Image (cartoon, rainbow, N blue to C red; front, top):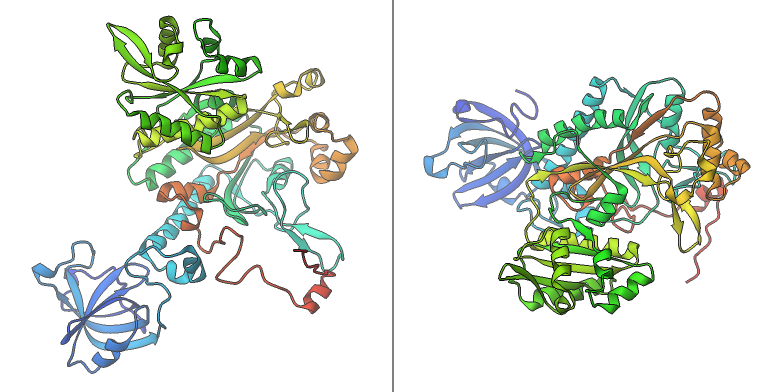
Length: 597
């Protein structure tokens, strides 16, 4: 007989009745009935109920042992009576009558129970993550993550991609998020940076003559944590391909995600490819965000022209429009019978979110004519109401909210109003994965704070403007071959067709104030590589963490990460970040200066 087990805790069934087996695992739950002691034995694979009579020589030892101790048992498999069968367990028709009991490792009193799946403070869960990971739901989340990565890896290899590993110690980049820096011992005063992404290296893989590359890449960014973003590191499926256009990238990615979400999506409906494509401009108009949740049927409509009409007597809106503002409408289906408090509640909530408030009209039909009710309804003529009804595709049971301000503010508030309405009115179909591409991002944006032009996205993307005309075009009118993959309101990936022309790269950076010498200095490796014959190439980098979050139906990234940091970028289990002693600092030529309070 094997030293530790003949079977796992998920294998034994009625066909094994009468056989003697050996199991090893953790004591999951104990139930002492006086003359009988029951406990569930748990391993990675599942649970088996074990029973011991008080006449057993091991009874007193087993009676005292604490939950989560690791034990090995030998015993005979017996069938349970019909009234004691546990239909929720694969092993629920049998139990093991113990003849031998061996303690492999005793547990102390637990800071948090494993049995029961109770909610515990995050600080406790992260400090004792090894216990948290024993809980069934967390255990299944991490198994799911492993299976998702294996599935992706196999699909990429089957599609002709080669897996490479790019450097972890590299140079700091002046663009993007804040770097994690690593001091060099052999080069005093100099630092490596951990890669925010393998962006430049994967482009050089294409320049080096390889055709299709991928890796499950660790990425490091010193940024604040959020529910859907780790504060220190994350993993992404990094993809790059040579001699491709945007459509070629989509044709590789869409079948992968359709199959992935069909396999692991618990029976939910998945968008069939080709996925819907929405320009950035249209997405901001219709959904108020570049991460639209298409399960929500509400679409935002620009009604600025209607509010300009002479038969709309709303001076407060007209003054905003005269100053360059706009008006957007967000329909609220089947809400005309809602009480006044519903509408005022949205108005107050919008103000709490930083908006100036929300106007609204409640629609009714009177003798086949639409009538606008509510505080501002009386300021609209019949013709204006009819135009609103047509533009917003309303009916007599609907209401409509209005936001009026500068375009950036209106887009922001109308987008969150749309999503709040979708949730509050139960319009969102939670049994679907709705994918879409957001395309044609602006290459540049105007930074109001710095009062200058800056990049809006990835500076290495190919602009959708010919190099001959580039200097003649208003930078804010230039779009790029940049695209995001979005699912259920969550950005899964960003990608782009890359700028592979050095002369165009200089022009692109000159628009944000970089001289040719600065580009050569800050992006030395990339410019050098592009100068020796670079193929047209492109790719993207879907986030593994967000993919698993969606599949596991979790809203917090720490629920699908093995050993995460907390939101303050602290590893409570290992005690990082930690202090270094003086000899370590001296060897690295570093002096720590205390921050003034």
